[in-house]
Image (cartoon, rainbow, N blue to C red; front, side, top):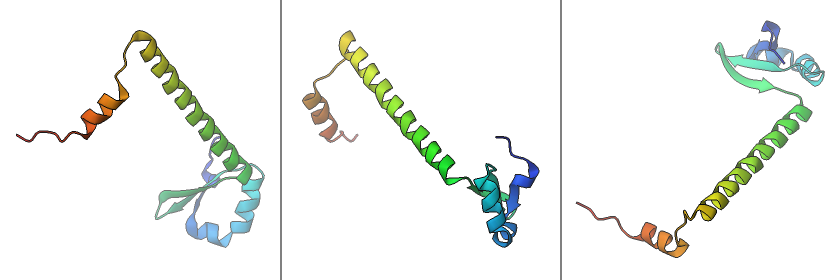
Length: 97
């Protein structure tokens, strides 16, 4: 959804018209609230916020699956290290010069 100029509201205006803004947001609008002329927060419908959170969880799951796939490709290609040796080398103090 594209924002229009009337979707950008100052914080002081929002305080005075919060109920009206909430009704508009509930009907599908999104509002950007500004403070000192700069973007500050957004008002979005609670259902839409839930949807955004669900999308973020799905994206995280896809990233984990992608990492797992890359790991399996590394194993298949022989690009592996013994985990105990790798951890031990990380725990060793680095020499100072």
